[in-house]
Length: 318
Image (cartoon, rainbow, N blue to C red):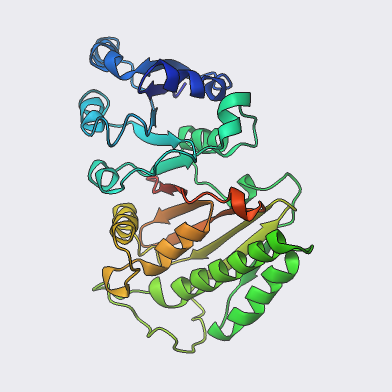
């Protein structure tokens, strides 16, 4: 069985998250940071190799920047998932780039109080990491929700596809209208990335100029998917280029996070905008074969919107 170890700053931090971890049968232990040296030595002696370490952002990267390096000395093949409540300060991303930490879940306050169920984002992400499977938009939506898929054949389809997404979000009111606007902006950025950002030549240069009208080549794949279950809008874009790399994605997010202005010259402008407007972003990469960029946006009131956004970046070896 692939196992989990969770690590927290102190007793209060551990107690806050304890209800969330009762559902995980393969949880080894919920540790405090002072337990780490002894436990890592014990794991090494007993040949215990947790597949996943879940770490509170109250502990890393600000409080204990060297923590990942220490753990990797004993467990070099483990994945790392950071967890944070939305009310906490957002962690700097540069240390995550350095330590290659690709997963961050911003969990709702009530999840840490009432526990989680099978539909919670934290539960889903943990199980996907244990299964070494990518997150998909159906994982955000209520069972049975219709997922609409379109194979894009021309750049001129963009406005039609955005309109189709907007029409799917039924209802009236400022919260619904805000969701429509966010969905339209996200669809526009995802399509632009697929049209002009993903296609790269052998030297990594863009094959097409931004804004250039073109037909999609018969051997090129652009699939746009979205679904709405009344409370959550989920969407994703798939291309067959696989021109991104996980560390590049993290670098783009970190560079743009540090800057007050989103600059094209820094690279990754579209990805950064997509991340900032989603509640959670997933990216799955098969180098040279496929990239999938997607995520979810919840229908919630404007005053409950969180500035802190999580991400889940996977690149599993075949």
